[in-house]
Length: 481
Image (tube, rainbow, N blue to C red; front, side, top):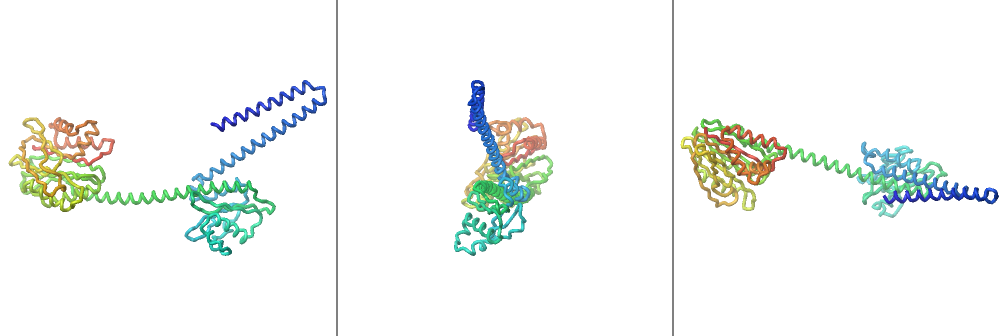
């Protein structure tokens, strides 16, 4: 804005000067038209005005040329110049055009070969220069420090070209470095013996070489970013494959087909927050067609670590589980084994609920190790009953004790078992403070529906929600027919 104002003020000043000068010429012409001195004065003033106008136009053209030069020079650091596979020729064409050089050669440093490589040239055959080893540049000099000094090395290269290739005309070179990284040298020249490189030419060369160095630096950064991005993409793909294998293994451990029992209808929904999760659920049938074992749990955390601990807990229940075993004793046995497996310093733990439905005795006996309270809809009283916890989480204390509880069941009763991810989901989706209370109302209002219909509605709500779930979600409805 300041530059624009200064330019406008300058133009107004010139305009006022021209108007004043023309007015003065007109005044002298009118007042002294009969005097020879008046005619001479008018001619002198016209001559002065012509010189001023000529210098003004010359200055404008000069400024225009400088602005045009800087504009084109700054285009050299545009990455598009190197997008098509390091197209250095475009860069050298711009350098030759702006500097009015007959030829330009780009030497790039090859650190592995300890040499300069003539990558591209304009106005001279590309194979004019062979790869020039540092030893060649320094063989006639005792200055061994030049090999580590880019400026000295560039100067040695220039001397070597003069000496070995017997160039006629003018020759100059500039170092290509940016942010303390040395990339190579830029050599320019003119063929005519009478032509020389002026201080203005050297100034242009320095400015152009700075822009070329920035372009090379940006290109190098881009290639590094592309390499890192490809490397990360390969790692990501490898992780994705491993996670997919982990998901397949975990899905193999979870129930694929629900048991078909007379008197009980089941429906289940499982939604990991990631590829694999820490929630688990299992149904167990035995020789007694009137009994069904039920297991549900939630390992603290998410992702692969939680899924590994989940697999351990799941396998411990599978190994030790029995429909005839007292639930509290089974829970205590699993807790001791898990604590021994995790060790004293582990921060992992797991909730779990194990229970057995007995349709002959019409009871549900269970032990609950810190899992979310299941809800029982009692068809006789039309009320919701919560089934509280009976002990601490698994894997925390080896000395934890658990209690077996037994509740009466009736035909028409329904139970809903779930993990805390479902509570969190309802709180986020419905913007309510107490997701547990919302679930109680949700469950009570749907008692006329089947177990499948209730779980299907929960599934649709989760799957159709645009926001990603933040925790594993598991829900199971057991209906006593």
